[in-house]
Each structure stands twice: as C-alpha cells, then as structure tokens.
Image (tube, rainbow, N blue to C red):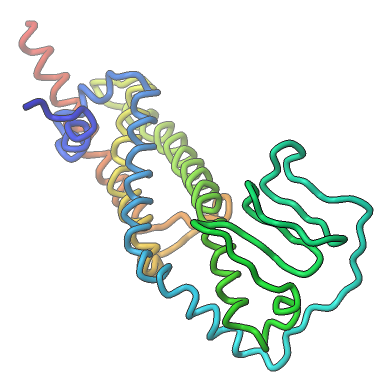
Length: 260
C-alpha cells in the first residue's frame, strides 16, 4: 500500500534529515503543502465549532432579548424590482407587489421575506420591523443569514491567514538565508524558503486550532492584516527551522563525504 504524498510530506516535516529532499523540491509545491496544512487546520477548527453553530439560534434569541425596544422604521420606495444578478437572479427585492419564491434563494416583497435553504420559508416583514416582539422568528431568520454567510467569511479568513503565513515565510527565509551564508554548507534562498514553508506546519496547526479557545497564551506581539503574530509560535518556528537546516546540512555533508 502506497502512502499518500501529502502524508509522507507531513511526516518528513517532523524529521530533520528529510529536509534535504524537501529543500530541493519546487517552491510552488511547498506553498501548496502549506495551503493544504492550513486547510486541514481550518477543517479541524470548523469541526470544533459545530456545537456552537448548533446553538447559534438560541444564542441569538437570548441576545436579542437584552433589548428593551428594537424596532426598525423607515420609508422605502422603488420604481422597479431589484434582481441580483440580472439574469436568473438569486435575490429579488420588489416592495410594490407580492411575489412567490421559485428559483431564487432570497425574495423581499410587499409583505414578506422569503428564503430557501432546504425548503422555502417565509417571515412577515412586520415581524422583522419589531425584532424584540418577534425575536423567536427573527432569530431563526438571522441564524439562516449567518449560516449562509459562513462559507464566505471562512474563505476570507483563509486567504487573510494564508497571506500572513506567506509573509512570515518571506521574512524568515531571508533571515535564515543570511545566517546560512555564514556556514560551510550554504543554501540557496529557494532551499531555505522550502524549509521554512514546511517548518510552518506546527505553527499553523497550533495557532488556528487554538483560536477555538484562546490564543492569549501564545503571547501576541504585533498585528499583520488584522491578525496577530505570536511570540511563542515564532520561537517554535525558529527552533524547528534551525533543526531542519542542521538536518539538511548534515545530509549534504554526508553526501559530500561519500563522493570523496
């Protein structure tokens, strides 16, 4: 039975002598591996959040109950229906007449708000104008809206977090490249970058999964793209990278001795 390439690369990440092979691969492959590790970390965290998602409606309803009065009032008129997108719309807003939900996901008409998840649901607009009074139905509606937004929010968080780790890879690769220039067995910048991209693995897993509880214990030092960079995981990254470079240089030294 052949071990999947991703699993093998993951195991090698924690075995310093294998970093010679990892350092020689294309940088794009290393970045793809880092992307997969980040995705795995997001999936693990998502599973941990499932109980909280299941309790979301009750939480929203309880929080809405803290308002003494929550009424929405306004005067809105329109000359024609709003269709998003224009052809085969997902969202339709027409306050001048009553509509029937067909292929759309979300419809606001003269008297109701209609939406579809697994089956069509309807809530009178008047109930959304007095959220305190009708907070049970309002909380159900807001829960659906939040759940529909979650994939987009998760994607944006993933991209923002990926950019943070890519920035760290660039900085740490340049730093350790300068350090290795002072040693006997010099490494190319690309080789150092491949090493750092893989030593990011424990950092990514620790930081992303810890976000489910708290990351305060990781000791935040600065913020990048609105995301904290932590002292504890930076030390872990540097320690792993030093061990990986030593393992890589040891293998290079061993190969050079065999050639002689």
